[in-house]
Image (cartoon, rainbow, N blue to C red; front, side, top):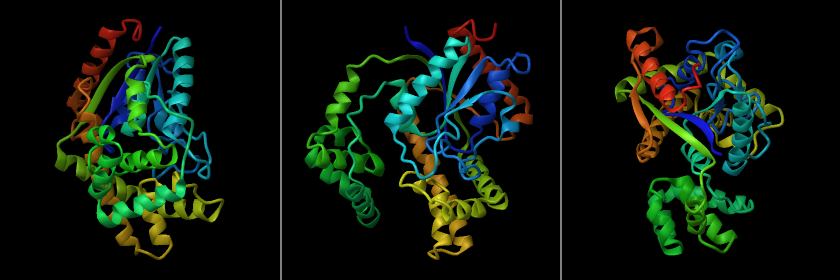
Length: 325
């Protein structure tokens, strides 16, 4: 039997976190939400990385349980395969208690790996090779690596966008370390049944308004102590390879290590966040299962927001009548 799974995706800063909580609490008594949130953000798993990941505070969660938040130290490595396993455990537990698992986030590969039950081989990594390939991509462009991938694994190159640096690097790494094309995993995934019965909803916003929200969010993060948070974490046990690449943390680390002034780091973070939002939309737009809704520019206080909530509630109720009983 497949597990019901509501999936809410979209670009960063579009308003997914509050919307998910409002959906979970719609028509319910306090303390008895219809659903529980599973974070689909690959960096909210880390303790202490709060401001830069826009992690909802306990007050903002309003009694709705959140899973896969604060489960690892920043020094620990994390992978999409581990994420996949942790989501399955959380979703089974939530569903067993009569609530709807709600996967909420914008890390495209992680969300897809869950919904489509991606097949992963035993973890094999060559961090030195990965670092060299990432540096080569920065120096020569991801397209140059994509040409190399097309020679090593044509099937994978046909599926991976020439600007998707991380997936290109990973495919080249697998070809080198494991001695086999990563496309074999893709073929195996296609033959595996999904473990879930998903309803996928996407949240989008007019581009200028979204970028304005990103600018405001970054400014608030900095005012709220982002630089101090990164300094505190880096001055303690430090960051592992995964956490150290988190958006917001790598830019601020550059400032703390003297490679950029504070205004330069903030400008880089705004630019990188805009680019990240664009990549998120590109990824999710390719999935025909996603039902898209427009997020109101004026936010949760506008009448449009109420219509948005009601529209998504209607979709959920049509698919799973028991959710809002």
